Length: 408
Ligand SMILES: Cc1ncc(COP(=O)(O)O)c(C=O)c1O
Image (tube, rainbow, N blue to C red; front, side, top):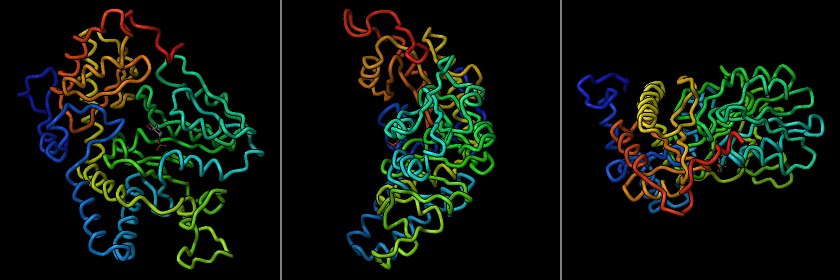
């Protein structure tokens, strides 16, 4: 689907009618104004059908479906995700969460050799937590000077010969700002460190090519922009590292011959499956296949272009009503996570929910995250209701806008 322009549209910016058809795939869009895809992508009829097929086989065949069908579905998803990320299936492990993927990598290296890990204050906390809990790791958390991003120069200054990982986000969940991960990989590699990227907020809303970017590790998952639900994450490991790393947390799925059930001999799998931690979540694998198919059919380039239009529309509309935004000044570095500063974010989100508009809040901000299936009209309605909301007198947030927590 291509992002064309419909000049007959009546809103400030043109509506691309080609995206209207896809809305029928996502029932929630007929019930709510759903603008929280960076938390949980909308559920599609396609995913539902895949899940129903899984349940039917469970009823009909029980465990026999494992060998006949479900291992095949698991490998199909791995292949599709690998191609989508610009990798080979042998470079991709399936894990139960982004945190589990981070943990297995953090447990695959010798931190005594290089004790330093560098991340940023804008990253999702689970990234830093992996090393916070390791007493011998020196964790450096870089500040953001503008509350939007962290300058690659700051990483270059902090990453040295003692550094094991430059670990940060592709898209910051805090600000939606997109990082130049190729530049970050170069900075890490110049001093022999690994570049680990948390791409959970990137895959499905912007193009990702892990090999072109040259990163060593990349973590994604179906929960958000890939519209595939909770319980699964994708871990890419650069091929030269796959055979070299020997994780210290493991499972029978990580072994070369798992169905030999040989308790006396442990052998890592030759490919990225050596990082896997047990039985894969079959319901999510089926749901994720549905989301993955739709994202690929619509096309990631078209999705990115569509989301950029929606975000510009939202930014213009919010600014016109006097709402204060925290987004990158450079539209090229924006993504579909838009933070609107607010004195009473929780109250505002509850007020919007009462009007059938689903958004979320983070400290000091209302967070609006549209995806390709949303429309400019929905964004207009969200801005209108948010701008009209007044915190209750004397209640939380009744005061003026507090300082931005990310620039303190
Ligand atoms: C950027 C990012 N990384 C990691 C996570 C957490 O992932 P998990 O719960 O799968 O560990 C989230 C969740 O919202 C996220 O936004």
